[in-house]
Image 1: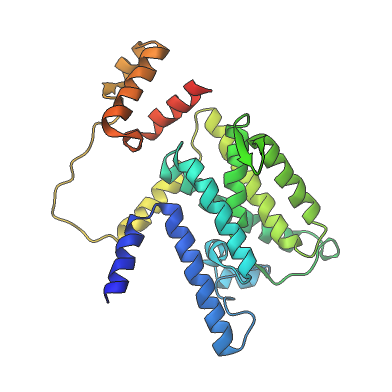
Image 2: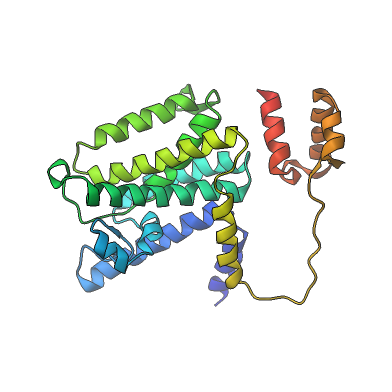
Amino acid sequence: MNTLRDFKCKFNNFNAFEKIIVINIIIFISGQLIGVFVQTSNSLSFLSLPSDLLDFLLKPWTLITYGFTHYGFFHVLFNLLILYYISRMLLNLFRPKMALNIYLLGIIAGGLAFLFVYNVLPSQFLIETSSVVGASAGIRALIIFLGIYMAETEVRIFMFNVKLKYIAIAIVVMDVLGLFTWNQGGNVAHLGGALLGYFYATKLRQGKDIGSGFERAMDTVVSWFKPKSNLKTVHRKKGQFAGKTKDEFNSFNKQKKIDLILDKISKSGYESLTAEEKEFLFKAGK
């Protein structure tokens, strides 16, 4: 009981993506155990996204659950390592809910692309597959988003610094080439997620967050499962930057704005910054 209680306590302190990683691991282990005891190689079929549209209509939840499902050890290991690394970069610069929007919408977009291709295109152009699984579509959405929104930013890969835009281009090229391999269905889903990431980044550059409606819908769903409390909620003042109102903050010159944010960091730490303050500081440092 103590072990379970400790795990629940630690799990509650994880960020959204760390929780997703844990859920993926639990589902993978459960699938392996089911496969051993039931003697089947398709132990998670009720979570996999089927290629047949009629099958999907009987299992509509698979449009999301396929993104949390893996069969191969190296498949889940590789995906979760990349997700952990990418999510840390995103959460340092953007609102956690927005990063989560990109990931989940990428999974949905990848699933819809897979269903479209396998139910609309002529079968002679397709390599037959019964279903698709894996978090790759969501991961592609995150990577392509960063590659578009922060194209000139460099990251360290082994011994080299590489711009995010080149990583994004390389991944898209590999997925396009992958359309001619045995994993055609998976690469279709990858490209669907990549397209979502591209569209999200380009719209965000124009000041429009296309995931806001999805975020509100998810907040509503989550609220159904939260216990009601009689305690009054204390709301923080909105629109404040480094202790100033938005108008006051905008009236200062660039250096003064930076000084205010740095002063806030020295008093309360980097984690006390809002997503907008982090984004301003990042852009100011480029």
